Length: 111
Image (cartoon, rainbow, N blue to C red; front, side, top):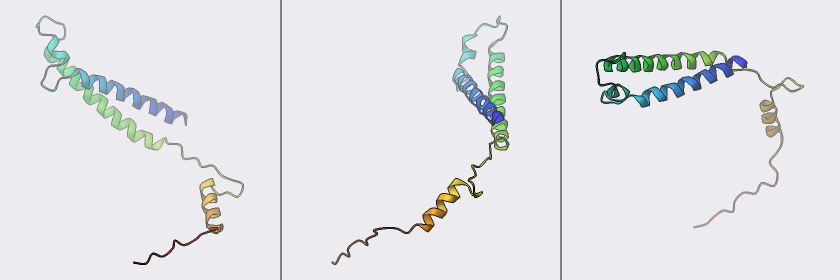
């Protein structure tokens, strides 16, 4: 159960980071990279765009891997009653056993 919660929190963090990275980008090649117009910057326009693209791909792949890994750590416990049946199965059996009371057929309509 603890590992499932950890994976779920990691998925949420990756999703928020991915949203932020995608919002920083501009679909026409601008975005954060367009703010660094001078070539004297430590990270120029091209390096910022490369960093944003690589981080987008990294976050997307990590989201995919975490989602697939979460399948294997989903808790699979069932609540058992004294007879060994699950509560849902017990309710299904009880509903089959109890007859429907006071059922009246709808009146027939004549045309």
